[in-house]
Image (cartoon, rainbow, N blue to C red; front, side, top):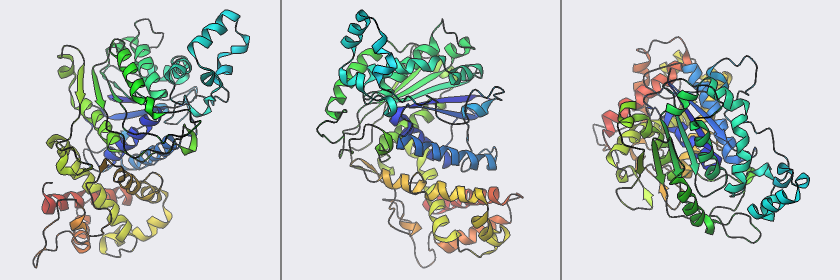
Amino acid sequence: MAKLFLFGIGGTGSRVVRSLTMLLAAGVDLPNCQQVVPIIIDPDAQNADMNRTVQLLQTYQQIHKRMGPREEGFFKTDISTLSSISQDVNGSVKDTFVFDFGGINRSFRDYLGYNNLPVESKALVEALFTQDNLESPLTIGFRGSPNVGSVVLNRIVESPEMRFFADNFQQDDRVFFISSIFGGTGASGFPLLLKNLKDPNTRLSNARYLRDALTGAVTVMPYFALQSEDNQVIDSNNFLTKTKAALGYYENHLQGLDALYYLADTPDTPYDNQPGGTGQRNKAHIIELLAALSIVDFMSYSAADIRSNNGPLFHEFGLETDTPDVQFQHLPTETKEQVAQHLTQLLYFSRYHKQHMGTDEAPYAKNLNLQYAQKNEPIFRQLEQFLHSPDFGVDAWLTELSQNRRSFRPFDLNTDDFNLMIQGKPIETGFFSKGISRNYLLDALNTREKKVQDADNFRKLITLMYDVTDEAFKDKVKVV
């Protein structure tokens, strides 16, 4: 069973994984693999962006387990933790999506053992790192300093997680890296991991499979700014300088990469300057959504297509129109075909679930014992969290995407009228057609419920909602 090992490095890595999870929940296809294994690498254990992505992944995982494998539908793609892909008889790897740094509760100076170094080594350390680098607490990551990150992240290669990853890597598996190029963790972690996985002298098992594996990456250049404040460690005015320096290094040191995707945008309204911890919680951004789609694009290539190319594939993304409010019609045709229907179906599902499902007493709801299940069965509560959690759910994600200066605003999230939810594509209504109304969806649920043969009421509900929203889109929306 072919797997995609997805390394989400740093805060941007976590945020892109969040968007990818939403796309997979909506039913977007991820070709050429049966299982996605996200491995989030961030030493900042309190990073809010990372922790809400982990909550989202855990919730998705439980829903998918209940649903089981399917050819199409919501939550169809298997997202698994590293430890769950094979039996870890020694218990060396925790059942989590996050690489375990074990908590680095000390400064970089102490991490290096600076006080015990000989004079010559101290002089070298002082030439390579500033005093601020040395005194920086590693509990909140590398604070935009890739030179610090490259030292600390070297421990990954000898970790139980990496050994377990290599032990379970198979011939047709693929690897994809997600990172920013202008920070600390991503800029240092991506080239370091790539180098070690492709190293001909690696001590990892399955070395030939790792060297030959199709490997892609998306490197995110500056797309947001931070507020300029006195005494702040991270200054976003330096992002472009860091990007240029990193690109110069990448030009000659990314051996073994088959595809590289570049993304950037003009920075919008500055975010709060939070170097890490619980305060690092950025709104979802269209760049992160497009970065997630780069993973879908990479997986759409067959092995033969990639290997027939003379050297790596390089990709950039451009909108049809340079607009601050991106709607479906502004996306290239291929991108629009990938996401428009699936995201619309997910929105219809979320809205109907929130507005009506709790009070439905129609035949379909009675046959599913829906009122009882939603109050008492844990899996139904997890579905509610996935859709409506103000911290990590679908509603929050779509709202955040619409709030940046470069917003992704394909939907009017302020209306309860299904006919008006798609921006620029209202559904025509008249005397003989009410378009998509509650009664339209309710009638479809009642009719369809009789045809879906499944003894599990939760699986049956998810299947029903996918089928009904699919029919509604094709019947009433058609195209966007």
